[in-house]
Amino acid sequence: MMNTDVINTDTLISQFPLIDDLVKLKEVTWFNPNISDLETALPYVGLNADDVADASARLKRFAPFIVKAFPETAVSGGILESEFIAIEAMQQALSAHYSAPIAGKLLLKKDSHLPISGSIKARGGIYEVLAHAEKLAIQAGLLSLEDDYGKLYSDEFRAFFSQYSIAVGSTGNLGMSIGIMSAKLGFKVHVHMSADARQWKKDRLRSHGVTVHEYQQDYGIAVEEGRKAAESDPSCFFIDDENSRTLFLGYAVAGERLKTQFMDAGIKVDAEHPLFVYLPCGVGGGPGGVAFGLKLAFGEHVHCLFAEPTHSPCMILGVHTGLHDNIAVQDLGIDNITAADGLAVGRASGFVGRAMERLIDGYYTLSDQHMYDLLGLLDKTEGIRLEPSALAGMAGPVRVSNDAEYLTRMQLGACMPQATHLVWATGGGMVPADEMANYLAKGRL
Ligand SMILES: *Cc1c(COP(=O)(O)O)cnc(C)c1O
Image 1 (cartoon, rainbow, N blue to C red):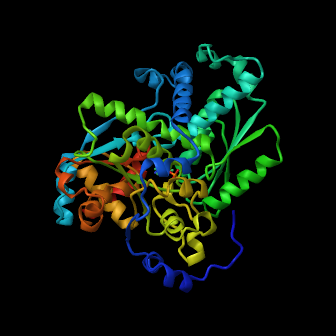
Image 2 (cartoon, protein in one colour; image 1 turned 90 degrees about the horizontal axis):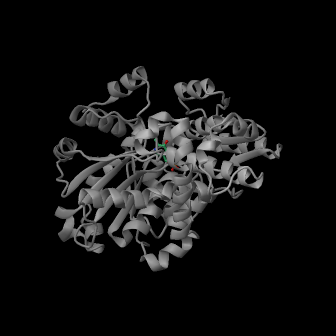
């Protein structure tokens, strides 16, 4: 949905003063006054717990295939899930640096180290490819739900899937996940990469036999071109990162998985033990889907915040103004150029923005330099190396801890010492050493 009306920045600023700071590329924090109880908010998503359970069951059916196609996943039985760890040294360093105590416990969810793509995209992107493959194979009478899906890892199935192609537009990580999984199944794959995409991601995809199309423009154009190319070919399936419910459900499975992990670790989430989850946001599918799953799993006691670069604040802009995908950051003269390539999106998903606007506690932005600083600090304190996008969530605990108005309004003040802060580390586990050295050199802390 594109709005052909010209957006008048001054009019918008007079209505929404926060936009002034966005245009000036200042770091902002906005706690959502429209947060609603679950009963009110969940129906707006248009999906429910059964849909997530269905996605979860599908991923279990595919586990035997995943083990065969990616032997490194045998340890987890073909289920792609990341661990979380406590990062106490980082918590102390953050408190010291910001002169702001972070009450409660700080944890890191390491999607950065998920197999296949080393990013959160191993959830949604891969799930949609599997769902599509299952549908084609069932329709052709080659597969039934009761089969051992290990049989999909065969020349017969590769020949079958090679009649079909898959296309996607991406800033990098989605292309990696979808490209590698599709190629393993035997599909022909076209990944349309925006200018932000790192060279090593394109190289890796090409080594898997994926056709990579490169654009000098941003993610919106790469998606549009991918969509167009796919439309002219009936055997081509376009994975629509801006609107896909399937992708969203693949991400949502994370909620119940985290709940199990927390139960095993004895971590409580209830009225006295709130859980704050900080999610880097690009187009919104990843953080939106994960937040939906978390809300289903933990109910009102989980508080989700979305984090964006100051140069690409598409979701906060869309939700705050209520214009959603009818406005892009470029309409305000914001350039959408950021080192956080996973978050370099100028126009948010209208589906996710509208579906989740009553379920997300807050949104904030941070500068690229800030992400580099946090990247360096995490390496120094914990020896964990992430890509810049994945550090966006790390600024969250301080934003929450510093906002008395929000904590009072949500009646959270008294229980903060028992709070859990979970920073979702969304990528970086596969960044080549020379690239990582460049990132680390930019950190000042
Ligand atoms: C894609 C991505 C995100 C955000 O996901 P969206 O679905 O685009 O909002 C965050 N971090 C990294 C590293 C990513 O690749």
